[in-house]
Image 1 (cartoon, rainbow, N blue to C red):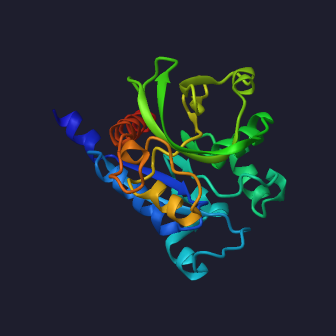
Image 2: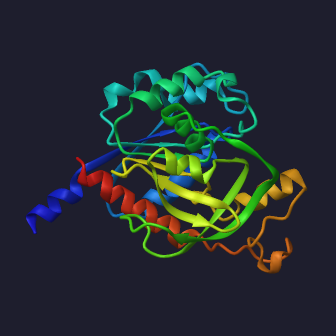
Image 3: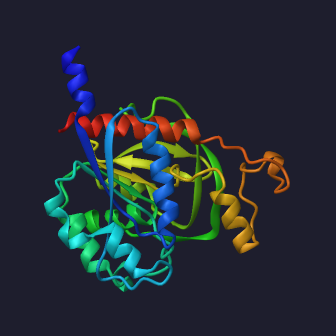
Length: 259
C-alpha cells in the first residue's frame, strides 16, 4: 500500500515541442488529455529558437516556453513532438530544421512524434522520405491493431488531416513495428521495438471541434465519418475520445515505469 501511494506521488515531467501555429490550442488539447490521468504529471512546452513566429506573440512564447537548446536542465522523462502545417516543404527548407534534427538524433527518452513530427523524425533517424497525396486525407477512420502492444488493445477510430504519407514498406525496412493501420488511411502508428520512439501519422490528440474548424476555414472537403451521416449540419461524432484517453494513459504508465 505504501509503495503504491509513493508511486502515485512521483512527478512525471513531459516536454511538448509545440510546432503548431496556434500554441494555446495545442496546450488545451494536451491539458485535457493529461488531466484525466491519475498521475502527478507536469507538462512543459518547448520551442525551437531558430523559427520565425507569425501566429503567436514571441513574448508569450518566451514567457511560457522553454528554448529547445536549453532542455537538458529540465530532467524530462519523455517528450511529445507535435505536427506542423509544413508538409509540402522539403525538410531542409524549414528554418528550424538543424535544431530539430539535432534533437531527433540525440534524444534517448521515450517520445511520441505526431504527423509532421513523425515524418520528420523518421527522415532524421532513418532517411525515410514523405510523399504527397493526390488528395488531402481528411476525416476519421477505422484502424485495426496489427501488433500486440502496451498502448492499444482494441481496434479504434482516429482523425487524419494531412497532405503527405509515409510508405509502409519503408517503415518495415527500417525495422519499425506497425501497431495500428487503416485500409483507407494507411499506417496510423508505428514504433521502435522497445517502444521508446512512437510515430503517429494522425491526430488522436484533437479535440472534438478541431476538424470542424478546419472544414469551415478551408471550405473544401467534408471530413469523412466526422459529422453524423457526413452532413455538416449534423452533430459531430467524437468517436476517437476513448482510444485517445486509453493510449495516453498507457503511454504515461510506460514512461513512469522507466523512471
